[in-house]
Length: 238
Image (tube, rainbow, N blue to C red; front, side, top):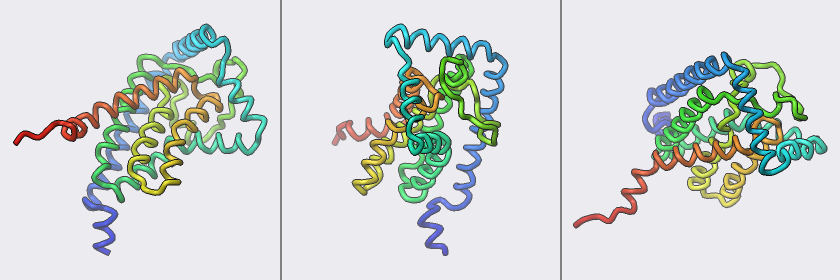
C-alpha cells in the first residue's frame, strides 16, 4: 500500500488535499467575479452586441451561427458537441490534472500554475468586460442550456475571453508533450481545435472570444514556462 501511495501521491495525501484546497479557493474567487458581472447585465449585452458588430463588419456574417446550423442537422454531432461543452472545462481538465499529478508529477506545478494564472486573467476580463454569449443575444442562436447545478455555478456573462478555449489550448499543448502513445498525441493535438468549434457551435462564444482565450493561454504559458526555458537555452559558464 505504501508503494502505491508513493507512486501516485509522490508528496503524500496532505499535498493532494492542499491542491484541492487551492482549487476551491479559486472557485470562490470565480463566484465573486460572477457576482460583480451579474450586477450589470446591460453592460454584458452591450458588449455582446459590440462583438457582433465587429465580426459582421469584417466578415459580413456570423460563422458561429453557420456552425450551429451545421451541427443541428446531425443529431450525433449535436450530442457530441453538448457533451464536450459540459465536460471539457471540468471533467477533462480535472482528469488531466489528476493524471499529470500522479504520473508526471514533476510537470504538475507548472501546469497547475499556468491554468490558475490564465483563469485569474480571465476573471479580470469578466469583471471589467462582462459579455453575454451569442445564445442570449436573440440573433438566431438556439439556447439549449437547461437548469441544473452547472447553471447555478456558471457565470452567464463570461463569454470574453473564452476560458474553454484557453484551458483547452493549455491542456492540449501540455499533454501532447507528456503522453507517449502516438494516438494519444494525435488526440491532444486535435483537442483545442475541437473545443473551439464546440463553444462556437453551441452558441456560447464568438470566434473573437476564442482568440482572446488563446491569447490568455499563451501569455500564461509564456510567464510560467519562461524560467525553465531560459535555463535550458542559456549556455552554462565554466
